[in-house]
Image 1: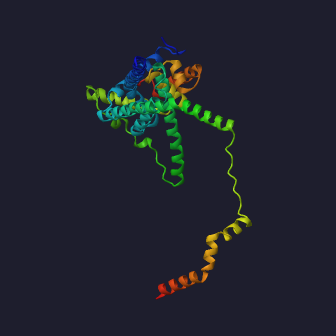
Image 2 (image 1 turned 135 degrees about the horizontal axis):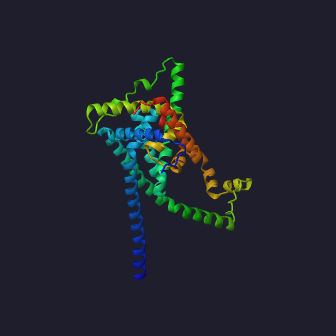
Length: 126
Length: 202
């Protein structure tokens, strides 16, 4: 019965006595303490429900991983998307703007537009 | 159409089986906690000499077992639970040492043991006469003090083997040491307690 070596009869008696005193102290726990233990137990069991929800998420982790890897592989296989080349403005484009027909019309009426601007500024001051 | 209904039924059955298994697991764990919680509380209380802190440690151990190890076989729960609890007790003592050092530095060191009253902490007799109650409480208090004074490994081995009733293998798993070490610590603990309590203790 005894798994432990070298215990004599007096040792066994002592162990039995200690166990009996301990058991009695356990049975004598007050109601408030038992109530708190009940609450702790129910809180722990509620944790399983939370873990269950987490478990459902866990099921989709490998699927999400495979999907991500597949998308990544396709992107690599097709190569990187072509970069849009940004052409810096050149002198030619400036000439194009200046030579536009509308701009010439504006230059012809330059005095008129200057007068409007001065007139507007005077009106705001007045 | 029939194939789809068939697939849906199979899927529902699977979900239902999983739910039933989880519910059964919860019930088993509930029974395990209900069977072990009061002894665990007293064991933690003897180790740290504070009931409120012991309650917190037991609750933490329950939470960790439920969240991390509830899927394990029920036979493994007791050693795992006590391993978590013993780790909590060790952490508590470590924190206490740091706290005491800080308090000594500020000149306000105070022993917690002096404030502890095991009789006041464990009232609510179970139909015993006042004399029997007092006699048991005195004997238990003396035993608790002697157990608390043991080296950590001896104390753990004694409480797990004698109070909780774990077998040698379970105690070894709970303490994270070999079976031979458990036997040695337990043997030394019993003899040390008998020496300190004397022949008249009963």
